[in-house]
Structures are given as C-alpha cells and as structure tokens.
Length: 181
Image (tube, rainbow, N blue to C red; front, side, top):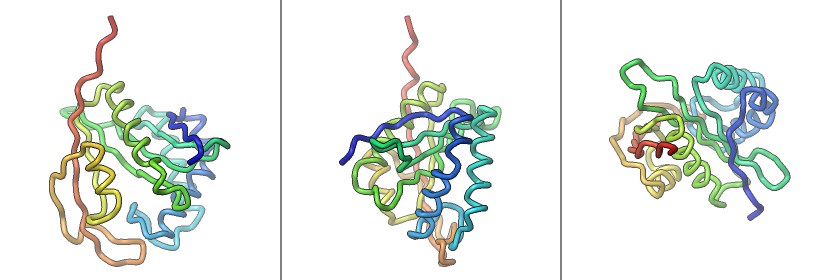
C-alpha cells in the first residue's frame, strides 16, 4: 500500500478540492453505496453537494477530513458534523465516510475513523453517532473501531438503484480531550 496521509481541510482547501471530492462521491454511488444519492449521480449534483460542505466548513459547522495517497490524490473522506442543537454541545455526527472503490481494503477507512476520534475529541465532542447500510462492509469497520450498535431501522433509505435498505445506527463514547498543562 502506498503511504496514506489523513488530514483536515480548511474551507479554502475544501473549495479547491471539489472535483476530487465529487469523483469519490460519484464512484461510491456508482458502486452501490447508499450515501443519500441515487444513480446515476450527475457531476453537477456532486459538485453542488461538496460546495455546500465547503460552505459548512467555512461556517465552523463541520470538520472535513481527507485521506491522500503519496501523490496527493484524495482517495477517501469523512465529515464530523459539529453543529448540533443547544442541548447537545458534546455530540457530533459522523457523515459521508467514503473511500474510492479502487483504494478499498487498504486500511484507509480505519485511518479516517481514527482521525475522526482525534479531531472530535479536540473539538470537545464526547458522543459520536453515525448510520450505515445494514449488512454492509462499513459495519465491520465501525465495530472494529469500537463503535456500538444502537439499533436497526428497516426500509430506512434507498440504495442508489432504488431498492429499500435497512440502516443501522452506531454510537461511540469518547473520553474528553486531555487539557494542556
């Protein structure tokens, strides 16, 4: 496996990475990932989605992490949605964990999820939640990363081809970030 670096993108970097992020989203949808979009996913739709995410990063509503290969190409991404209701300042949602199909099975997802824990802790988040397609590969990834299954909702979403799919919800408790002396 080539060297992979996981890093946080600034709003400016996110805006400059729209094409690469759109490529990952389109690839994932084309390969059957239920990630809120239907197939075929138009490039304009993917670009508009990532522009909204870049705007959200600029507004400090979320953290955008990417995994880059040795050549600097983005091969994976995940988001930490930090903007939560007033009574949930300690919580964040993990969203759009995506890895290019050609780059899977190389530990990129595990590296991204490790970075999620670190960045969420630094942001003062101690409870994380996410959802994923029931029975998919992501379930094993999340469980190996210490996530706890909360429950499953049948027919919660659609696969990109229009079939219903069940969704499993997960949570993870994090220790508060250590305070600097």
